[in-house]
Image (cartoon, rainbow, N blue to C red):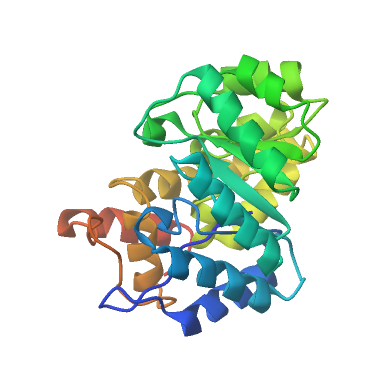
Amino acid sequence: MVALVTPMHGDGSVDWDNLETLIDWHIAEGTEGIVAVGTTGESATLGFREHDEVIERTVELVDGRVPVIAGTGGNATDEAIRLTRHAQRAGADACLLVCPYYNKPTQEGLYRHFHAIAMAVDIPQVLYNVPSRTGVDMLPETVERLAHIDNIVALKEAKGSVERMHLLIEQVGDGIDIFSGDDGTAMESMLVGCKGDISVTANVAPALMQRMCAAAIAGEREVAEKLDAELQPLHTALFLEPNPIGVKWALHELGYIGPGIRLPMTPLAEHFHQPVRDALASLALV
């Protein structure tokens, strides 16, 4: 699944035409799910109305061809409930709920936060643990408590640790699906039992990422390792500056979107342009 960028014009306004282009391209390239308005979609800098509209338009443009997972997390529980209710009304298939960021809740606070959202809105929900962004790490014991709630169906784990993936699969893998949220370790994670990858790199190399994921999920290590080795330079290059700086610059370089990105995020620094171009060229994307 692709953690889709939100395309923007040079003035920072949302580019609806290129959103449609990206969605059609992804589906043609074999992407099996669209995740809208997550971290890569700049959820933190979209206003409520924009956030709602991106989800509405994405659902409309996808038109049932693949599942749409709407990012509806927040660091305030009431805010996350409001966003999740809207996504359900808009027709999203599921919601992605990031751990509350900045305020650093306890494990009990995380449990109560996600429990409250699940009780308030009966749409299928995917929890999202990304400690490098949020400042809090949701531990497997907390995930295990939440896995007993019927509409909590999956976890996107982006700690970047295959050891953590082993632990999660052992503890909760029979109750909910575990997905990788870290492209660099996604192949090994899928080989040990993760159900797929919610991917940044898929924004620019969707077909290759789909092939790698399919091989890894099927347990075809040799094929998966070959494809992953080809992708690793791109994984690295896209994160030379914080996401989504690199991936939006790469998509602009490839002609898929305009140059827009919202402050406080800035365009990719010039000295990183060539490394990203080289990574794109290594896969014959340019």
